[in-house]
Amino acid sequence: SDADANSAAEPNTLRTPIVAVLGHVDHGKTTLLDKIRGSAVSEGEAGAITQHIGATAVPLETVSEMAGSLVDPSDFDLPGLLFIDTPGHHSFTTLRSRGGALADIAIVVVDVNDGFQPQTIEALDILKRTGTPFVVAANKIDTTPGWNPHEGAPIQQTYEKQSQNASQRLDSNLYEIIGNLSDEGFSADLYWRVQNFQKNVGVVPISAITSEGIPDLLAVLMGLSQRYMKEQMEIDVAGPGAGTVLEVKDERGFGTTLDVVLYDGTIAEDDTVVVGGMDGPIVTDVRALLQPRPNAEIRTEKRFNKVDSVTAASGIKIAAPDLELAMAGAPIRVVRDRELDDVIAEVEAELAEIEVDTEEEG
Ligand code: GDP
Image (cartoon, rainbow, N blue to C red; front, side, top):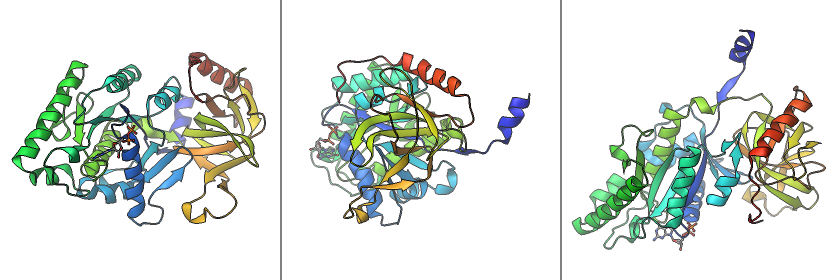
């Protein structure tokens, strides 16, 4: 048909997969995210990571530097990984896109010594419900009695250098986690034994403190995304932007603003957008698109840089009039050359799917 011919001519490209971190409290979610951000920065490359609003973008080149021999950039055409900065179940369940999860892929962090805990099981239930692919990061391997740490090493390399006692202790903790996953209905194994990541959950032993196994974790995330999510990552870059509101915030000089994760298309200054609000969809025009200033510029008065437009996947702050009643978790759509009423109807339909949880914090 004509419609097919048109869509074939559209400028499709691959966007960054959006990664969320889940797991029980104190199992190391925040430390892992900080480590990924920190070591990417210390690779010293200019632009090694980009701090977005609410998210951190790690480009393929940086993933590859951090993962060493485990990630050959020529094997991939996905541009990298976008990590949502707020770990936890609340942000995961509030952040949706078109009825599904906003995150394309998740990391479930489990403390190897503490094992499965109530929020571990809760995380797995959420991922089951949303059908989100995930890997399990068996964290804190450095706390294994007798562990001899090898900063930043791939897991096999450091594992080979452990005493038999230490490696046996780690093994038995890992097998317990694999058993627990199986009790929850997931067929799982140590990641290097997994052939098909769509059928089996890969378990990656890591330490968020010594970075051991983090090369493996990044390699598994890239591999899984490239292999099984490539089609999902094909977006019409120039198309009207679609995103999810992370937070509604007052900013000095800008009034009420929206922190948004854009997962499709482009949003530009002066675009008309439709946003989900407490009293229904809000129609407004984008006054400014703001990104955080790099640390090097932090001493200047202004905290944000203005940009003309952004393309998915990215985190962006949007300043516009009439945002007071906008809601965290709500959809935002750029209207562009579509009928305003159609876009409003689209946003209304999505709002209807969002269960209003009055217990929600902030
Ligand atoms: P969250 O609640 O899941 O975000 O957990 P945090 O990242 O706050 O970590 C909880 C505690 O565990 C902190 O004291 C961390 O320093 C510690 N921790 C996290 N990861 C590791 C690890 O790999 N090894 C060790 N030894 N401690 C860790």
